[in-house]
Image: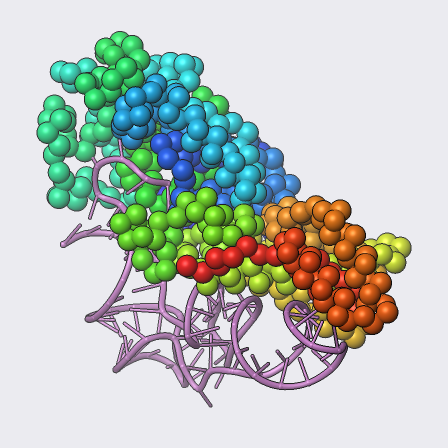
Length: 469
RNA sequence: GGCGGGGUAGCCAAGUGGUAAGGCACGGCUCUGCAAAAGCUGUAUUCGUCGGUUCGAUUCCGACCCUCGCCUCCA
């Protein structure tokens, strides 16, 4: 059963065949650490997480790199405004980013190279030097170095642009008048006043690397000259990834990436997310409103990556309910499986993986999960599911959750709540309903909701307020 | 202007040349001291509009309408 993905380069669904059998070299564009990442950023990272986890679930070994862009116009502007060194300015945002990854249960990449690391800067400078030697780049008067796009006939192949179309509507920036062609992009930016004390020495003078060369250098430096998959948001296609292809292939003389995957942007309540529109959310904003990481994860993962995702609070609420349904089913299986002596297969379990093999069709995959839930709930209602089948389903669910990671957050129940719970159980046994209700209120006051089910009292954390804005 | 996505029930969203997965919400039923939850169950003669091809189209073709994105450093 082949795994198939849509390749931005060919604009077709292709069978995925890594260069080295069983191993996947994956590069994913990471954040620019000048602020807290927003949920649009995280849609991309969650899509990449789904990709990685599914490949791993299918038995492939994935080596993933995600870069951190810690020097660019924005980070420099930020540190100068704050009056602190660049590294001091970006560090808290790096930390916050990693916390957010954990909140969303995104698997850590194997490498998080930082653009300002000495070894990477060195490699960028070396690559630029090679490009100049080969005639693909040139130094301008001020010490900036530009890539000569006319020297690379394939330029525009990924974005499916032709250079003539590009010339229309191009704004020539006054600070780049030295370029041979308006489409030429910066490999090295000469230092200027606005850079303050940010800069590195190079054969072309003091300056800093351009954004595109950062990724080329870090990707090839860690993963080698040829990657299996390179991902990013759709806005990265042009110019960023187009530039990466041009630079890298001109240096190595080999195809840079076999498969390009890009995810569509998300909108919020039907409009483009923008600070000015008041619909701009960081992950932290949502946490403050009482949503959990797995709920946001569900909301962001549940729409296919090649479709635009309309992020809404109704959708978050739907995510919460869906997860609860999944939780209930899991608990039901667990209590049934207590009597299991082995595992007996249940039909229909392969649909989940097959859906993801098909260009990460998450909607179909989730459909398969919920169909399984309904079918087996029906069977459990009829006392027609065996403990061994339940055990098998739990094992299957483990596999599913190695990809989706939808398991509940396990909050420890305070001892005090346990004690009240015991007293309440006694009261209920004695049919002292008034006392039972009083104790229920006490438990609620401590932040827990108790429900009376056939199996006895059941606790769940009281959801924080402010579910809708 | 160039290039490319979308328009499927109240909302989100799969899908196929032969008559529409799944989730949420809503109604019904079961359960239940109350409350809540949970489980089951019912909800699109219809897939933006208009034409065309076809025995048959939501699915193929054409036109149009609406919407979103990219077009030089924004995931």
